[in-house]
Length: 171
Image 1 (cartoon, rainbow, N blue to C red):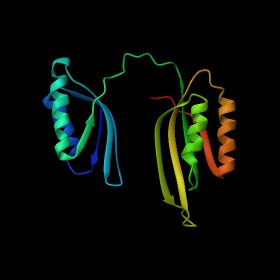
Image 2: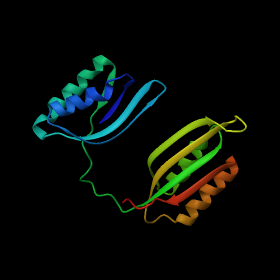
Image 3: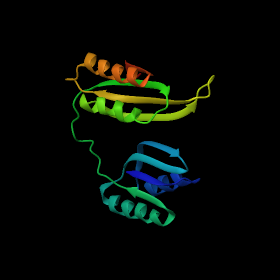
Image 4: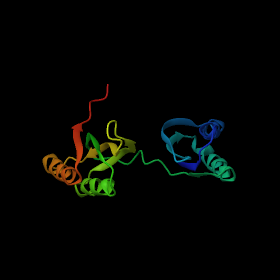
């Protein structure tokens, strides 16, 4: 499900309480606060007989300014094997950085699993730096050398530092 609304204390607890009250188990989530707004995506397991009641309870949160959209889990859909890569980018902020990088990734059928971006003040100059970290799933048929060349060309054009490395194996 996705959860979107104005951030406030107790928001996550409200959703967690409803999941628990309906016999559910919280499996995984990614949540963040940006600009006073809260956005989260999460997976829960709820007994089939209680799913509709949970959806109705979550829908009632609209009265509190919270929008919840429930999607069926795609867990049973087989995913092709892919190589997990980590990409980091740092450079002077300018419009179009995300668009150019994401266009190159899409052209190589690379899936962006996670993307974290921020603008921060450079330590010495005070200029605005754009920083991005991404987890990427690179499909087996992707020519990694060509992908690197394409990303390095964009990085050179934008005058940003970009690294693309194999993700460490999970322990």
